[in-house]
Image 1 (tube, rainbow, N blue to C red):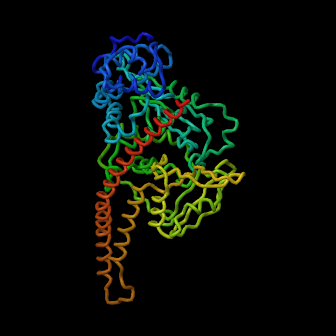
Image 2 (cartoon, helix red, strand yellow):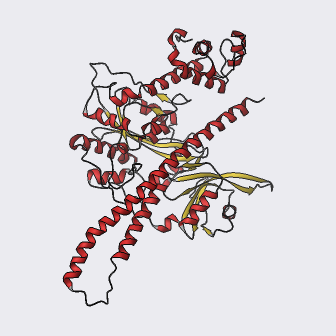
Length: 512
């Protein structure tokens, strides 16, 4: 089997062998002795369960050894490599794989973050994924080259992301890669307000996803340190699992913020480097988004991290919280079709659908209150997920009539305007400010208050002001942590649902 022998498996490989055999069942893999069930019939007379988890590792390994197709052998090798990567996580955390250095300390800090496993345990054994080598460097190879990466992505009609631009810079901020990429799936929303890219920009683009993936892989060795902000989003879109990385969103703690708080790159740049590099009302600059994390890493290497950072709390316009954003709207859907989704006892004004020259449209639903918008969102039927910025999102089905008058349903996406964490923080700050306004309101017609008392009062206001804000934010942290825990539980349930849906789809395809 391509050099892979039974002797290379041991009883310690039972768990990964179970995964390999289950994957072989899903993909209808047949070895020289047939598929899994036929193999069992030929090799055993006992009526033991066909469940791979209930079979000894030797039986599983014997079945895997019968694989002859190159694609099946590659699947086994990728799954073993992925399993090795996950089992080596403790070595990565301790830094035992690479020599100790200031840069490696930041790699280790990334691995030690409580959310690393949640974000960076990629399904790298799945089709299309590439797992870079994570072997220990030779003693003579001390290369610690850093490359910073950023990708711009669009929403596709299969509820996935597709890359439309990828940029990489080196430690001297030299641009190594700047590539426009043609999406390999139908685009639901180009997110032009964020990406700065529309359909017309990609008409003459010939670079495919595989070209972009290969271009990034060409920059990497096992020792390359990949840098980025929330880098897991970029690697997931590229389907690249690279071991040595620094995620700038994992390096810092924040004062008066819940443990789950994740600062945006612009806010982090302001807190660490002292300036903002982006107008939040304008599209992203992919090269800048790759450059700033590298500058932050250089700053930390030079000055270290001196305690928690202060991040300015952004006040969110309450009017924005009263909206829901509908996007990925097919042209066969009208405003009236969307209006039928809104519960009858809830007042909602829907704007006209904006098409922007693309295949899909967008619009806003405006509600009388924040509670009304949130309640309506919960009533929409669809699996709860998040967009790439952590904003709650659902794919819902809209009933329409076809050109032949027959009823059918088409998918539309709807999301909240900001993440639940940001909404909670915004409400906390707003509540604190309202409390201060009530506490320190002075009757302007009261002439009995002398000037020095007013002056003292104002000075005290400044001190109490900060205390009141801190109290409000601290009281909020407990609620945010509870929300975060519930979100993690919900995400796990959604993953289970997706796995079950995948199994059902595989079974459906196998039906004659």
